[in-house]
Length: 479
Image 1 (cartoon, rainbow, N blue to C red):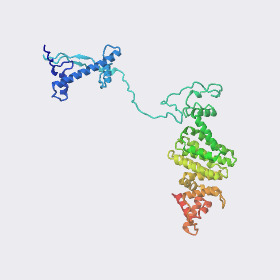
Image 2 (cartoon, helix red, strand yellow):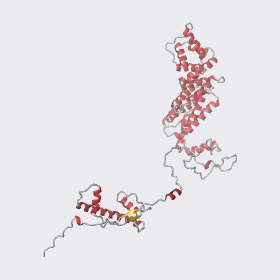
Image 3 (cartoon, rainbow, N blue to C red):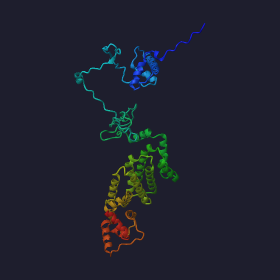
Image 4 (cartoon, helix red, strand yellow):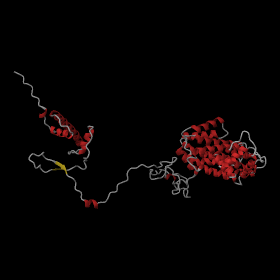
């Protein structure tokens, strides 16, 4: 018996399926491809049909998992996402389109049934009668304070205050002891303002400070604060004091401790000046406290600007106090002047009105008739710390030198006179070979008269020994 021959292989044109090669040719012609062979069209049609079956199988899985018997466009979208194919756009399951069958083609050989989506008819009268929907505002960005120095402001952008589970006991509220305190009803505490009173105004200061320490400072910072203040206050070892100042000048992470250090410095200056004993110990304490302020200003990791109004009173009190310890008076005022100059150099750009306000305070202390020599000396040194312009306006133009000279006798060599002469050297330094003014010369006589009018007889006689400096001081006064 002879074996049957092989079956003839069907050509590509005999392949039939759901997706016809004619559809492939239509798509190709829409892309300006007119030379597409029958074999390529049949292969592409088979591949498209395979992909359609694959998508339908995946969509059927989603339909079955949703316990439905009708396949929706969302099932197709999910199937396309699973197959990593871009989903179809414009078809939503909640608003399925309604297809209508078009009328039969009038020609005898038509393309078959045609379906289309009928447009929705809109009734203008109904649209006009309906209420207009106001569109919400678009999404925008804005800035607000989430917290200011650890305190959350009560503004609409921040979350509302969280009430505590327990209240403080023993706090007097509205003059009635025994009632539960309202201090714990708002957390965190909010600083008082003109339109909203603070809820912590009725609490005791000691309880408030203890509560803040427990909430803000960790145990490590409390231990650091205790050891720092112990090492700084005399009588302590100089090595420990230098190490404490170095730590305060360079260490980071002390921002939470800053308000307590500022308060400690202010209280220390007040206690040292309030005692009035004028002993050596108070002078050393004031010197250390001024060094602490300077170290705080030198620390670049600290944000000092909110505490400038608390740092200035200790500096100005030391500068303008009339009865400092005699053996430390000049050094303390010089140090306070240098610290004031350092503070203004750092922050006068941010606060342009700071230097004029301090200069006004110093000028008032210099020219007032009821001030002592120590206060006047501190005012002069403070003006020297502000700068040359402050000396010119306060000591020369403001009449400060004339007021000081009127209270000094001939040959007075007090520290106040030395401070005024040093301020003149800031305006115009002394010459290496001083030449006195010649009264017989007409120009020198005119210069001498101007010195007497501006500075008074006492300091005119002092500056007359150096004609170059005297002319420089007057020239600075005339600028």
